[in-house]
Length: 338
Image (cartoon, rainbow, N blue to C red):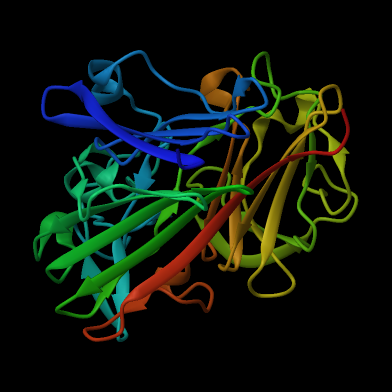
């Protein structure tokens, strides 16, 4: 019998559940096709992600729980010079209007959050691109989603490929997006993690080595001002391992790393020794302490800096025909003691 296994079963009407398992270590990854959401990441006897009891609960979820966020993660501000205040991105210096918007800070024109309801993949059903694979070295599933030109304002007929790979060290997430017109892509995973397995995240040790800056945002609109603020000595300082306290519970901010690529989020449970290291080849990380989940879980969203697609900061977001968007995340699981 192979060390790794891959199974498929029905999760709900028209939606499958895939289970990848390391039978030697007992690590298990479960993914559903709806939103390509991680339903379970089981390690060392606990599920490290939040989840919901069934498909109906995921369909009504408004927190993007464990979903694949594509084509555009985070917030896009409206064009205040536009009579309709529509959210925009820049493609080759030209404004492209998106929408409809789905986040409305009090007293401000609406933002587009996580691509909106029309275009966002959090509410789309992915399909298998190839049969699940498993052998002595890994187990994997490859999913895909096709989006038509103009959906939610996004240009191009686009195909998004997403591969989940379980190996002896943890999980890999590979992405590739191809398009037939210039378009924008800033995709991410929206897992809600709790390395302790239960309770709040307070008491967890968090480190963001190299995350020397945080993107300054307008406190009302939540959109970037164009400034990077050094974190040293603030509540955003996670350059060294830091025990999370209640004062950290308000954080929902984009961190910039001083070196491009290879950046990490490291979560450790001091009691069990469980450690999750989230590695990405992108230049920033949105850290959200799960205020809408009573701080029971935190999100580590790897993507480019907040505002790159509107020209606020330089970054990689433009995708053209023949040059697909590709990125990789690693979720490394181990124990530092015990």
